[in-house]
Image 1 (cartoon, rainbow, N blue to C red):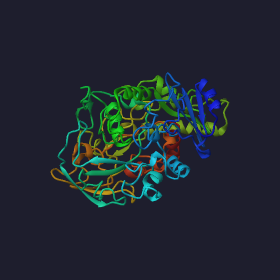
Image 2 (tube, helix red, strand yellow):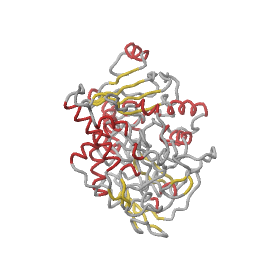
Image 3 (cartoon, one colour):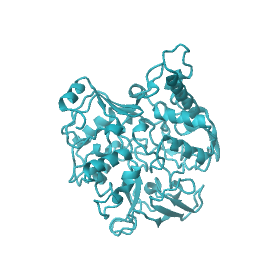
Image 4 (spheres, helix red, strand yellow):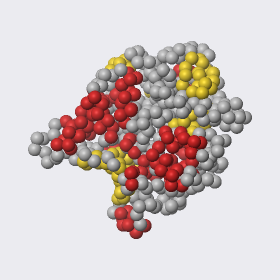
Length: 496
């Protein structure tokens, strides 16, 4: 473990806490199999503050633990792409640093998903540019589609390749015309934490399509469907096995005991921002930021949530005049509180967004605020599970992404309700699971906690920083944010 001696680390561990170096000083890389114990509290310090991970019931030994031990032939483990110093995800900055430290030989850069395509020369940086520059992992989906139950689906659209900068979709070995056809799309690793919220269900109906929530074929129970961007799996157990085959290269998958250990770890882990360089501790002054709020709270149900989203910062709206804080600290805290109120109350017209404006009866347009979709208190996920198209991958709304493949989707039957019969997209998203043209570009909403550690943002990494996220929504929905409102929203997201 870089940056600290074993003895010093164990001393911190006995106290149940560990602080990692600032990112600019070389954040700690957790290598598979190094046996570093996971503390009850782990603080990742960067140039703007601290992100905290809480492990309920911790600390935990990682020696022999299947999340941390190398699997398969290349030395990868789950922790390779879910780094504690990146809020249990993986930032593009961390990938670049790891490339430099290992001359591109770390298991992170495995050919099958850590490169732009397995048949490229793996020793060259250009072959890994999507991971290094944009934080993207290659996801190879079967074509024609296969649903969450593993059944082949006959799509109601055709899929053609318009542009293929990586060459992988046109590859005779790995592409759409290969013996085992695959569609390669490129997505950000989703964080492994806060699953109490990710698995929560507001009620039994998915209001985005007006149908019951999906059933896990293994258990027969309803599930949220919020685990992966394209809902190709329905449970954490299924996600583990999917990752074991596609990201760890395991032929036999994980044993039942290995799944149990991973599940136990993941369900006890919470991550959130704990401290800001200017604003101080996010639990001070009556606020309730930080991961302890997540660990102690419950997601709630639809209808009880929306206007309470991020109300843990409401105490900062009216800071007493005699509060013992600096003017800079006061300004920051008031900005975060304003950002939370803007997030809840700033109304705008939401248009041409499948899963919101269609097929259900919300209307097109519908007037609402950010909490229309991000309505789960403490987390900002959707307590009414289901996938939506916010335009981040589909033309004409998506920002230009010349480094990504571009596909032409042609609907065979009914045209798409917002794009018509022909759609150009960087990633068909949920349609690669359902085979439905109406689902092209739909994705599962990202969690909003611990954002600062895992740039870039959106499933395809198209927003380089938090300001770019706000600017995208401003362009997409013509919201009319003032410059101050944008700064307040950025400060809010940076405090999550």
